[in-house]
Amino acid sequence: MTAQNLFAAIDLGSNSFRLEIGNFSHHHFQRVEYLKETVRQGGGLDADRYLSEEAMQRGWDCLARFGERLAGFPATQVRAVATQTLREARNREAFVRRGAELLGYPIEIIGGEEEARLIYRGVSSLLPASDERRLVIDIGGRSTELVLGRQQETQQALSLRLGSVAWSQRYFPKGELSRAAFSLAAVAARAVLDEALDTLHAGDWDAVYASSGTAAAIGDILAANGRTSGVIDAEGLEWLHDCLVRAQTTDQIRLAGLKEERRAVIAGGVSIMQALFDLLQLRSLQVAEGALRQGVLYTLVEQAPPCTDLRSAAVQGLMQKFCVDTGQAQRVAGVARNLLEQLAPHTAPEHHEALRHAALLHEIGSHIAHSNYHRHGAYVLQNTSAAGFTQAERGLLAQLVCGQRGKLRKLEPEMLTEPQRVHSLLALRLAVLLCHARRPPELASLRIAAEGQRFRLSASSAWSQAYPQSAFLLQEEQQAWLRTSWQLDLDWQ
Image 1 (cartoon, rainbow, N blue to C red):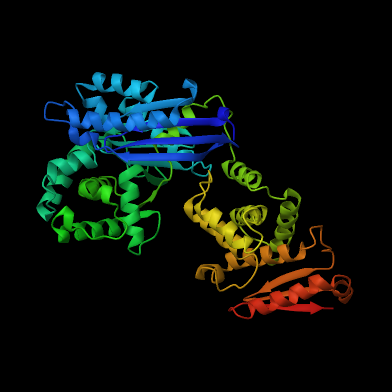
Image 2 (image 1 turned 60 degrees about the vertical axis):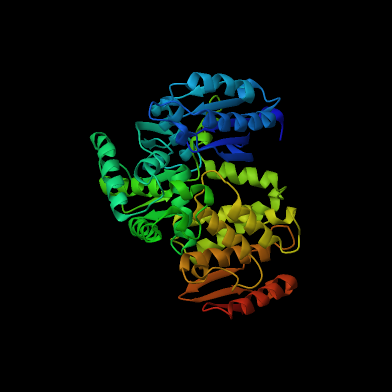
C-alpha cells in the first residue's frame, strides 16, 4: 500500500457524516478505514431552513476530527460532498466555509441528480458485471434517490425531498408509533414519490437494490429476526411495521439488529420504504453494499481504464494480498475443473466459475496460520469486500474453501443437499488431495462419475501402487463421505 494509491471520500449526509479511505488496486477499492458519526444535521433545520448553532457545531466538531485523520493527503485524492440538508440550508455558506477550514479540503454541495449518479456508481462498483437493468434506491435523511441504469451507466436519475429524518420529525414528532401516524406518513410519502411514476415504470428493471443507512438498518433487523440476509421483502416490511406499532413509542422498541443510532429515525424510513414497495409494485429487493461514498471515490480515479471482469480482478487482488502460491492455486483449479466436467458434464458456467475462484483462493488462510487454514480462509472470504461478488456468492466461496478438507458436517446444510454444490465441493476436495505434493498429479488413468448420490472414482491398480499416499488420502476421503447421504466408491482395477 502506497500513499499514491490512497483516496478519501467524505459524505456529509443529513443523518451521518462518513469518511471512507480506500486503497485503489486491481481496479477496485479496498477499504483502509471507515469513520462514521451520527451528526443528525438534518434535525437541526428550523422552519425557515436555517441550521441551528448546535447542529453546525456538531458538524464542525466531526469535520475537525476527520481533518486530523486526512492531514497530508494530496488535495487531488480527497473529495468531500454534502447532500440534501446543506442544499436546503439558507446559512449553508457559513457552515461550508468554516467546515472546509477544519477539514482542510473544499466541501462541495452537490445537486440531487449528481448525488443519484454517484450513488449508482458506488452501488454498481461492488456488483458483478452484468447487462441487467438495475433500479437503485437510496433513502437518506432528507432525500430519496431513485436511479435506473445498466452496468456502470446511469439512464434515469431522480432525487425527491423526503427522508428518514424528515419523515420521523414530521409524522412521529414525539416518538409515538401509532397506526394512524404510519398511515399518514405513508400517504404523504406516496404523494411525493408519485412524481417517480412519470419516469419509472414496473418492468423497466430486472433487479432492484437499496443502499445506505435506511436500507441497511431494515435489512439488519430482518436478518437478525430470522429472515433472509441481504433481502428486504414486502412480508418482512409488514412484520417490521407491526412490531413498531406494537412498541407504541420509539424508546420501547425492542428489536434484535436495531442500532441505537437508528432508533429515532427507523419509523420514517420504514414508512417511505413501504410507500416505494407499493408504488413501484416491488415484492423484494437486495441490500447493496456500495453507496454514495464509493461513487465519490471512483470519481477520483476515473482516468483508470474500466474493468470488465471485477470478480477476476478481486480474486487476483486477494491472491496477491495473502501471498498465495499461484502455481499451486492454478494446479488445483485445473484439476478441479477436470473432475467437475466428468462428474456433471452439463454444469452451468457460473458453477464452474465459482469452483475456479474457490480453488484459486483455497490457500489464502495459510497466510494467517497453516493450522486450520481452510477455516481462516473461509472467514476472510465471508467478511471481505470483494468487488463483483454478492454477499451470497462470497458465502458460497467461503463454504467451498472451508469444506476443502476435514469433516463435512461443519458445512451449511445446502452444501450437502444441492447436487451442483455437492459436485463442486467433491471436485475441490479431490483436487486439493491429488495436488498434495504440490506438483501436477497423474490423471490419465483416473475417472470419476456420478449416479444419483453415489460417486465412483476408478484408477488402475498400478496407479494406486505408484502413488500410495494419494491412494491412502482417497481412502480417508471415502470415509468422510460415509457420514453424509452421499457415497464415494473407489475402484482400483
